[in-house]
Length: 562
Image 1 (spheres, rainbow, N blue to C red):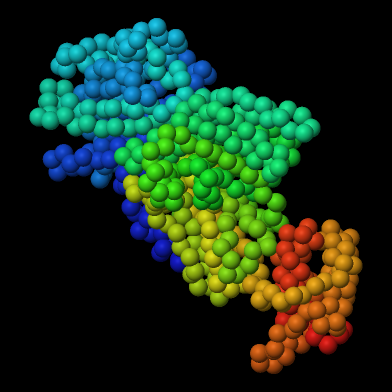
Image 2 (cartoon, rainbow, N blue to C red):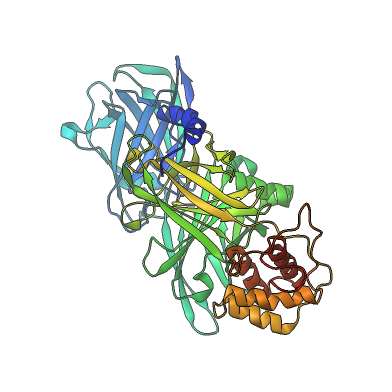
């Protein structure tokens, strides 16, 4: 559990940078955003917007806090005595506009949603509370530690909200800027829509929590248990440049078998998305499996490139999720400790991967970050490092995510993430994971480091062309996979294949391997591979190739008998 000097060296620059880094813009699927900085004198200054609660669902709250901060992006230092002009927009409609003043530069505005505004211009329904600051005419502030307020048709519906902020004065209420500094930030409010999937057995309830726009045309296909739906979306490149992420959340009952597993493929407009885009969360809502589509800006641009220029004129986004056969999952879990004091932190990391994948394969490692009470940590910034069986470093990843240049480390928005790694050789690797902080301000409450060992099997030899395996061997192998027979009994049965020449033994390199001692265990990864063969997911040739490992490792012999 103690961090190594090697890992400390790899991350030293990252940790030093994170102390004064520009807080990273959160995804447009949550309630936090940071605008690109603007040069102002000898500083680069920017604005952040944060909602509290950050994961807000329309109709669930009657009061929310909107925090706006003006700060030096290079030093992460808040500027004081700021006059703000704040506008709130949704779908091209102005909802509110007013000036505010804040003495310490951290503006908190209470927002009270109002339903069913009857005015054709929605901003006319908005009213404002607070006192006018004597030195900043027209700008509202709150006396006695309170907050100015906006009451209007804001956050009453789900969708993407544009919070436009002009800085009219700073460092003094009487100091007006010669030119306003203007910023656009984007925050999302969720909206839940209820649907019903008609299966052969029953109607299954489905809730889609959309952070972007209303969804429609929800379909269930019993042929592959896929679920599809559509949503209005502007695919023009100019618009996509302003979209950090599209977030859609599907909530399935835990007892709905096709969505009780962990393996899925996801598609947007028919293009299969990256593994990090589609996450399954069985932890956050009791009795419910939640599937998240987190389609980032880089992935949106890639989809446009794949589908060509005509796709840029499309005004709709189509989603599709398809369950995949469950893989044989290996997993480890470990606590984090403080990197300096080594005291345990209130955080743990679970790492899971497909046990049938081997050296040379791209292996997606699922990393899940837990806080107190095994609740998922959100907006986790982390880095990881892999050390090979000989003690040398293989892979270190402590940089920024594509499309998020302001942030330090990798970002896990929902507390679950995938990192795909190709390891060059079989063996036991050590994985070090360091959480740098959580949230827009790198909250250090859960920051720490932890380690675990992961076992990776060897790449099987090339498949034996035309190999066939008698049916009784498949039956016997199934008993072994289910635990009904021992490793020794399985090896004895498989020896038949060697004697009959079904398994072609590769020529030995160097001295022939000596037979393994009696009772030698068969690697766990081979049992996973055998399970896929028994289920009909792999060919006889692939199964035979995997068995050649038993001969090459000395667990079985090439000449009949162990």
